[in-house]
Amino acid sequence: MDIPKDYFDFVYSIYGIGWTTDLDGTFQKIASYLKKDGIFIFSWHHTLNYCIAWSCDERKDVIENDTLVMNKSYFDESYFRMPVDGSEILLCNRKISTYVNALAKAGFVIEQMVEQTDDATLQTEGDISAKAKKAKMLPISVLFKARKL
View 1 (cartoon, helix red, strand yellow):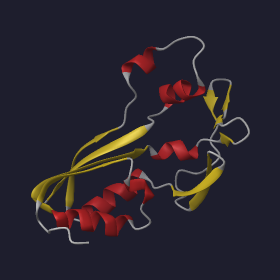
View 2 (view 1 turned 30 degrees about the vertical axis):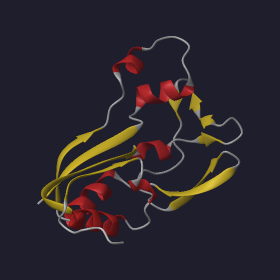
View 3 (view 1 turned 60 degrees about the horizontal axis):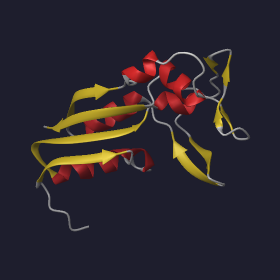
View 4 (view 1 turned 90 degrees about the horizontal axis):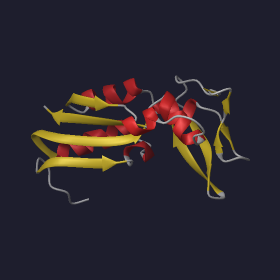
């Protein structure tokens, strides 16, 4: 691709980085496009989400007695198949440290990492959806802000 090197002040990726099969290479390319002190901001599903059991029949997370059921180790970074709208996608769950280390290797310093659920969801009571129950127990997404050194 003919993208100029050391050209951009900001690069954003909203729910895109998790699709890469070459995290180190992707971060290195992004770093090459940014000026010194350029900012890279990206978000993805929080890595704990892929550890939660999923009912394909019911199309929802498995929650028993208001407790999320885990069926995959957080440390398992192998690729897995996930059903989506009558088809399947192939994903890799990466640990937070994998993202941190890949950013450092590409020449970034992390300025901020955000993993939270909105206050309205946290305050919700009573009969709530499985997704809201999950969001009250763990962050749905994670966001990184990193600066190129």
